[in-house]
Length: 386
Image (cartoon, rainbow, N blue to C red; front, side, top):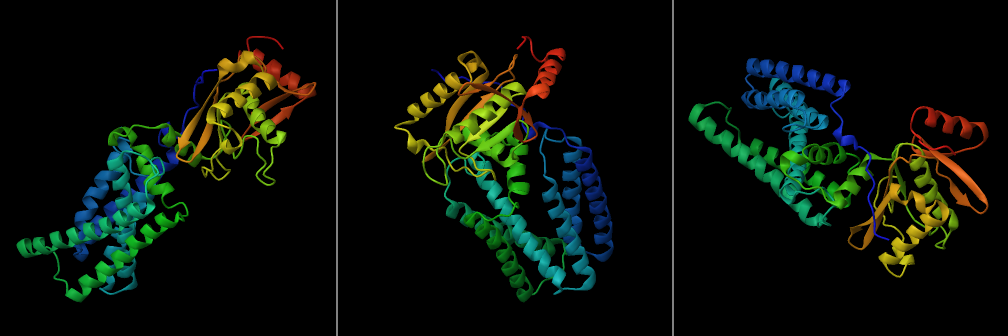
């Protein structure tokens, strides 16, 4: 059978900015404006210069959200934190812990910008092209140091031409470079070890996903799967690690197949959804158990036979699936549309009815089943009687 595609559920990335996020940007804008004024009074020229583009970025993000460029909230908070530390350090004098913390955060921010630059140029999301972590980490570190060196050179020549900045001692400058390097190295190591603790998800990933069209990226199947995996399970998205292999025993287990088919039936009976087989509960791409089949064609045929025998051939038009390649592993992506009549999972001589309830598939029986079917038919969701 040729693989078909069903309408995919709407992704989270298409939603408009929420009221809470808008309120956050208002607070950040007020903070940037206040720091701009304070930096003028305390003579922190660098922060005064930085404050202007920061305020422009915040306003453009609020007004033109995702139509031009979208800056994630965490990145805005990074910029405001840098400005605050710079102004506070100016007030308290050089060499304070605030200055040291500011330099470290600058290194972290520039390291993140280095990682973003890699994926902007490759026009892909992290993990989609099986990129070498060591190369990305090295580029991130070098980018951070080079960008900071360029800023210090600009500061030096602007000071010579216009006298805008205070003259720094070589010891102070070297201390800043070392601390920025430590911050950039920290990001590089986290990326290489894949122990980012959510830092990249809320900065690098969010920036790239929110600015796909602006950057000119073309979303591949791998990137779509990775985006879904990062979103986490919901009423229209579920992950399964395996199709028929019990990962604890290593043996074939009919219960694994039932868990997959149960989710498909639940999606068909509710509002549709996407099932990713080969993705663990935490969103890690582990790969479907294709080693248990002679070829990927055999896996596809087996899954088609499962649908035909335990759900029904008549529901195949509502189900689309394909194998998304990730090098030595693959993810079975199953997209289910909403069906116009009740769908049952056949198990032995029984027929079982499942629906979605949040991120879970639940069985309905007795009056619960009758009421659910009647409500769906009354609301026009189902056109045919049971």
